[in-house]
Length: 284
Image (cartoon, rainbow, N blue to C red):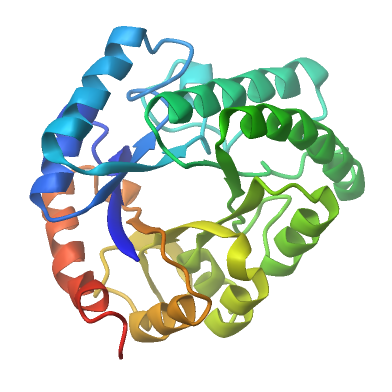
């Protein structure tokens, strides 16, 4: 397993600046926000991508994941937006089509940056549309997105989260099984699992080799608010043991979008707390 950090904590900095800071903190990978103010695909130019590629080459770290979860750029905002909408399950065809095209463009960016993964969410449940109907919309969207991903050699990992259409481990596992694509798996946020009271062993062993990428943060008292590792009550020893048990060897990205006021400090403190789990070969 390799440590990574997300640029969504560095929204007051450019992507190359964020990459330099993340590499300087000791991380081997970086997750890049595919949204405003970073690499929003509808406004990102070839020269923007070239600058990012140069920053990766200069620092020697890898692009671990393209975070295509949010859509602040859709609303013309710098970061915050209404809970991942419009989504791949949105009942409005035009809105759903926008998200499909956005996701395809994120896959293209991942391909150009030699990034193995793109992460997505299901979006929320929309009043007036039953969950089973939303799931049908979601599956239709996924088939198109995954066909594009397959052609680019990029994997798509869905992240479940409390309050979304796909909000629990069992729901995601069932969807992965139903869709049946080799390039569709999990972007597993173990903080979300913790909030939901899901045992790490059940989640990690249940998803197994369908875990494409991991998000990590700390959580305190079941409140879904991302904290710097060490500030909450999550047992990272257990988490890393379970990941090792299924031979997960990918990136573990610390996601602290809540720390945009002092991202470099948060990245450094997170790395200091988690470093032993990477350095010891997970013999805990």
